Amino acid sequence: MTTFDLLLQQTINGLSLGAMYALLALGFTLVYGILELINFSHFNVFMVGSFVALFVLQAFGLSGQEVILTGLPLFGVLLVAFIGTMLFSGALGLAIERLCLRPLRNVKGPAAMITTIGVSYILFNVILLTIGADSKNFPNPLPVIRWKLAGATLDFRVVLIWAIALLLMAALYIFVQRSRIGKAMRATAQDAEAARMMGVEVDKVIVMAFFLGSALAGAGGLIFGLYYNFTSFIIGFTAGLRAFTAAVLGGIGNVPGAMVGGVLIGLIEAMGGQFIATAWTDVIIFSILVLVLVFKPAGLFGRIAPSKS
Image 1 (tube, rainbow, N blue to C red):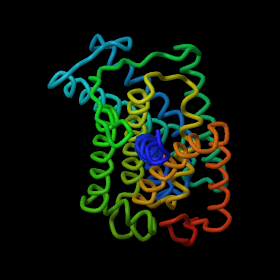
Image 2: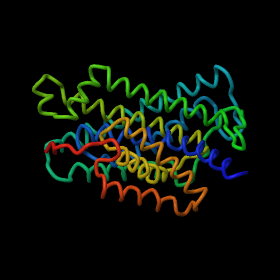
Image 3: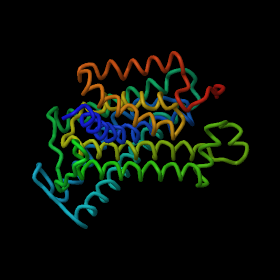
Image 4: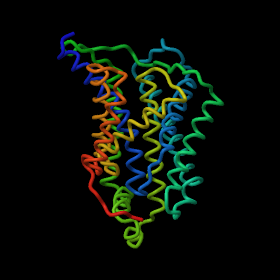
């Protein structure tokens, strides 16, 4: 392959990774925008979501790598898998907020953030002790359809991932910009006390932020399984850190910024692995995180805002 062909192929791969990171980054940015809280349990909500997706697909009798569906059965199974995974992950996010974080709502300092780290390790170990340490093969229900683009290959799986991710991100953006609760979320993000005085039910806004963010993490977990054809109890840490970097890069608290940041991190990972070395990918990504925090702490699309505390 020529350099151009390699560049095109890695762009395709990077956009697929970026779609997954963007969905995961949106969860960080929704919660941070409203509570100014980094929710580290989000890492493993994503991981749990991938296992829920695996179990949903297995419930349809899909297992192994040779399962191929086409037409309406394929889209019906995927629709149920996405809805089921997102609802479960959203409910898990609600449980974390209600049981672990709401009692700490008015506690100053890092207590809430440290609690999310504890919750993350609980989820990590629950999956490890109940399902095991071995990687689990993800069913591969997608037909093998490929198209040639110059010297690169574009397959049906990648196009489907792009379409699903774009649909979910567009739906979230429209929801936040146009719906009543979306406007309440934006008002709360700007000034929670002022929003409360104007009649906004801030507790409901926070609940919605956790539900939507966790549901998108679940969708990202299903996309991970479809893309890599496996899942494991360890996938949350690496993917979560990269998604967090994407949220910071785009401007944490900024929804479009999280989307753009996810795509950029995906492209950086793909290009770095191809043209430098896979072993250096994390060095590159987290060096970018440090540089952004040092020189532009608000990110590419964020802005420095007064503290809400």
